[in-house]
Image (cartoon, rainbow, N blue to C red; front, top):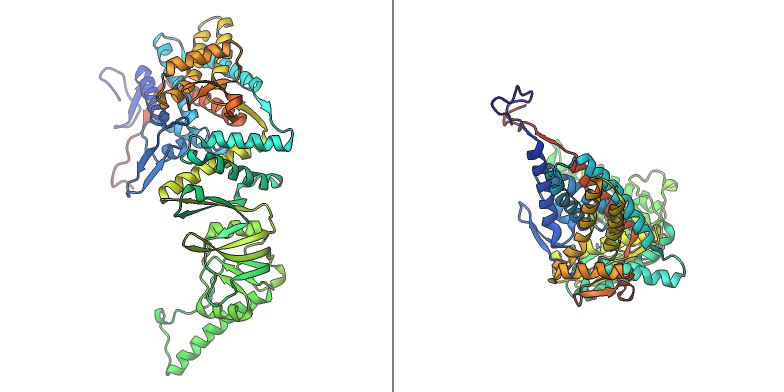
Length: 529
């Protein structure tokens, strides 16, 4: 944006240029607005948001990453927060709301420091010292839970329960936490690949009817007239068109001098199709699963041969099925010896609600399992799936890094006290930035208390006093609105998730506060090539 007397502008006409205080206000307010948007979803008593897309699709969620992913934002600083939220979700699966709120709180605390003419680089230097002290305090507060196998399982259950307490499944969090722990322990010894855990959603019943099923469940039906149960199955997983060489007679021009010639062409098509079926049967499989359609004639051929045929399996299902059965997805069958078949002890039809599905038990990848979610509506099931996915990601992280910390605002206050001690011994203006970092950390338990409808100032000051008295496991008890012992209540979180949130938020806030100019390019004109 150019002004009279401001000197020549090198930007194209229509481009905007914000400098100094205007730029700082624009980016800080934008980031704080995003933090305020998701603030009410934090904690066990957080609220949900309804997101409606342009085509009318409705999403009900309190997951920070999902909310921010669906928003169309124009502010550049707001987009930075959305990116760190996505990174947090990809890296550890949880803490997406925490990272946005903490980054917003850091910028809110930096605003008055900037007004006092403290240079952004001074604030950044103070924040880096504070971040180092906070990480050291967090590591000191953590402990290793990988000792006795039974004790480790109990700790995983508590961590899963804490993660799910802020989700839509919180009323049944004991059941869902146990399901998640059982599923993770199945895949623990094979590298914790979450692809081996399938989540299947079926409307009907209540959330209490959800269960963990052994093996893999495919949401398809077995072909007509084919065996409904198969033991010691040898499975050929394929992605091949069964009508490869079929000529679309009614779409192509074929000149013949009699109806008999048309019949001959049709016979030739059928012969080619049946030749492919014979090649498939030559592989020695007794179960054939295809990504594409299997037509009536091949289906009849497989039924006569006693081969179970399943058509039109969705691509993700086929990929996952190939992995858990130990099969390779085939597309050509000229060399049967080169095709790797999957193995399974039993394949049978099962009924879930009103639907019939196919269950694979005793897969070659024995760790495979399926979490079947039941619920009143698809919106509820979608949110339950996101909740379960977050819990599984957290447990996977815990299995790799077996350190845990106390939740309920305990670790944040513990870090804030350590940062305050550093501020007292740091000379110069950096100490103001370090104090601001401590205030930002204390804003997290304050937000949790506010979302529960309690007096946040009273509870946070009580929590600080408890920590100063040596009660290192004191935190917020959101059931009673009091200060409780997190060790007794079992509110335990993953160290890695908390550490990632802390580092990501500090780095994002540092990046935003260092900006002193915002340049917006000329909007693309209609009709331009």
